[in-house]
Image 1 (cartoon, rainbow, N blue to C red):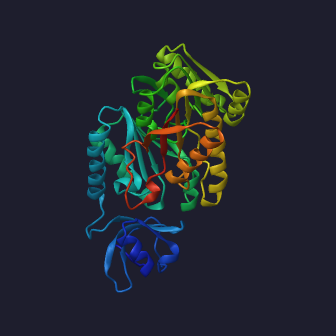
Image 2: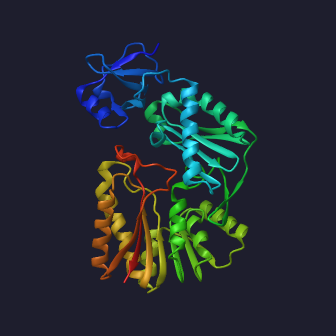
Image 3: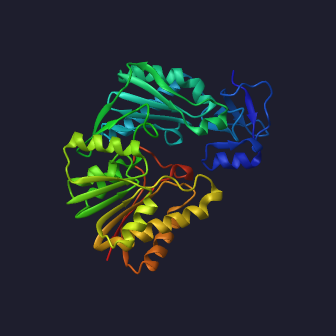
Length: 387
């Protein structure tokens, strides 16, 4: 029998508005309840509101699983994963690598499952999902017969749940290197050592979109292992990929060799410094990609993030040839699309360039955006043309 947790009027309103998070300040603290339990959520009149994962550590004390009053058991979990897989068959049917389960976006808060061909990578980012992890692994084994299931729980956010960082193979064979074709380009992914779960799958559709516009001499800043640079190479005369990580660039060079591309060069440098020097030297590009890491991890860093985005885009706009394209991204949730557009508008004025918006994009469709959960809309990607 699940325990009941009573929530405040404010939290009731939040649940009814469609948001799945309930904060610790809005619950009546339960007695003798282990972190990770599935609990019944009720209001002060004991009316049922839903079932949630309880955390004894995080400020997000409850993560709503369902508004239904039915057992949240292995069958329920399997149904949710199956529903997520059916949706990916619609929106990512031709992709070899994609996000199979996207946490709140698939009604499985704090669970991430990425698929790389016959290999799966999971993250369990709360006490509740940590407890359910063995069932998740069994469900994946039964339904997909993977070669291996890897956990990438080496992320700092787990500390908020009182969970240790950890990574390794949970089932199947050891994983050295996984080869995946994306948008006609071969990439080698190191599922145990790469950032996130191996690749930035949320940019898959944006990389394909960028190919429609890329031409001439291209620059890819924050190129990591070459996702944009190598995807655009077949459409451009030459591409320069810049990143501060020698390890990432070594992987990019490896991916370049896999595809036999001779028109891409790599530069190890701080991208701000590279852009400043390139601008000073009068270099010009026909296509520029800006895909930096999140500059605003917290609301308090929003203003400094806006300044950083403005500087990057200002320098890129100044270096673009007339008719050139800027594909610019922000993965900072605390910087809204409106903020991002405003910053680029200011940068265009300072650069004395007229800019038109060709496309306003978000993360790939296998990373669903819930209308009532703004946190699920984190990635902004703008395709701009300098007139």
